[in-house]
Amino acid sequence: MTPLLTPLSNLANSVLPLLADHLWQSTLFLLGAALLTLTLHRQSAAIRYIVWLAASLKFLVPFSLLVAIGSHFAPGGAPVTSGSGFYFVEQITNPFTQPISTAAVIVKKGPAFFLTWKELLLPLWFCGFMVVLSIWIARWRRVLNARRNATALSEGRELFALRRAEQRANLATSLELLSSPTSLEPGVFGILRPVLLWPESIAKHLDDSHLEAIIAHEICHVCRRDNLAAALHMLVESIFWFHPLVWWLGSRLIAEREHACDEAVIAMGSGRHTYAESILKVCEFCLSSPLTCVSGVTGSDLKKRMVHIMTDHIVRKIDPTRKVLLWTAACLAIAVPVFYGLFNPTPGHAASEIGTAPRYVNISIKPHPEDPNGMTRAKVMISLIDANFTARGVSLESLIQLAYRVQDTQLVASPDWLESAKFDIDANVDKTAADQWQKLSEDQRGALAGQMLQGLLADQFKLKVHQETRDLPAYELTVAEGGSKLQKMADGKHGFMHMGMGELSSKGAPLDLLAAQLSMRLGRSVVDKTGLAGNYAYSLHWTPDADEQARMRHDELIAPDSGHSNSSAPPLFTAIQEQLGLMLQPKTDRVPVLVIDHIEQPAQQ
Image 1 (cartoon, rainbow, N blue to C red):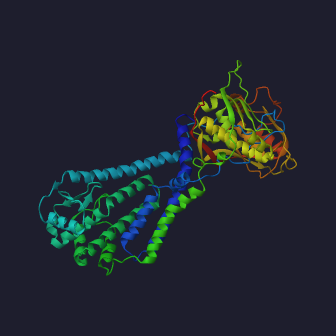
Image 2: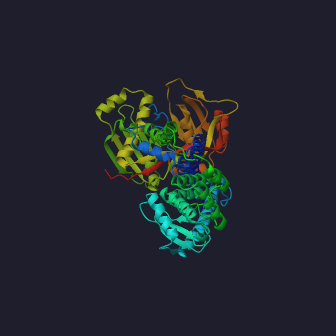
Image 3: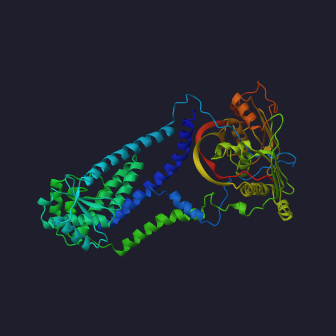
């Protein structure tokens, strides 16, 4: 993949899963709003308009934001790490064989100029966004030109009717009345400082009662801040132009907005017949506004509006039962995601279990001296006796993978020095923690060791992380048709794992360690889907290809002459099936990734 396409691929993998979650949540919220408006069909249109507007704004406010707010106030939560923790070998002089997968980023095969369907979606969305935005801008300029060519009215019956309507509506500020030579319908233009554009040719067709009814309608738009709401939904339509329900929602907003203003004008004292006639006259002599954020008088279905206006008792007070229903729905829409975040905090804000795990003391961190031969052999050990931690020539990338049980393909936003800088680390625990450590079982020590290393990274390297889920290329490790050829060890019995170039053998290790080692050699996440629990003995020999050899030597975890690799051994995929009774199947899977929010290089100690 070319350098230009790599960021696009990364962006697609990051954004699309989040967008998919947001879309189904917002769509479900919209459908719930539609059901709610059905129960309010005999109530005021202003109430239904608020419900539709909330559904529109939901597209701009993801539930994840509310969940994050709840997580911020969470008292604690689960750590990012998954799994049972560290795996120990039987002798403390041997490094424990945790998945330190530092494989290179996988390179897709085939021509570099081809884009996947995911990578095509972002350019396609951007083109649609620019087209919709361009249409809105062109229409906005049309209305803006009409405003620039208009002249302010300082007298006349139109201005007198406007001031009377402002007094009846208790409007705090007076509107500027502009006479426009265009044939656009009367409309309120602007959000912060709105003005009333009035076509100069319409006045002669309206008597005083018609004039006052039309102006009262426009004042209602100003009082309700309809232009601001319409502009926000125009933003929603521009961003989510591909969603058909968003455009349908826009038509519902316009319809209920005009019905609400119709009800308000009649409530202010205008006669039904007079008001209906005034709207018909405007429709006869004027053109409708090209923008929904310029509130006019002719919006929505004209026939339905006439029926609505001429219906007796069109304005009804909402009954107590429906008030409770509305308030309950509003509170639940906000409270549910907030409380979810409060009781299920995201790892980036959760206190995590590292707050209760023993902390390392007497910590020494020094840069690893360069080897004259250019070879760095990483070694990491933890004592089963007193939990003391020792590392030589280890990178922070490896320690993070070790502490959080992730592979290098699952690390996001890591700085370049995270892999290149090597450190020697010695850390001890106090006597009380060492005594408690000896009382724990091996599994308990494994879980606690991961938390202790997370604490060391947070204290000494100022590491802050959070977890996300993304679609990544991966392999699934499954049982082949002939069944597994692994030898299961007795419960609680652990053994060694030997790692070499073209060789993996175990005398009793869980299969997640095998998956981690395969991930390191393949440069792609391997997910254990075998369903085989416990520890297994096996011996796997294969001939590594050139990519695998380059990857292993680059990561300096396997010496060039280690293992018993020879050309007579089968390729890795074949060896796994023939020798272990397992198989690797390529798949794009939802994989949890660890996003590094902050990390610092330590001061030398």
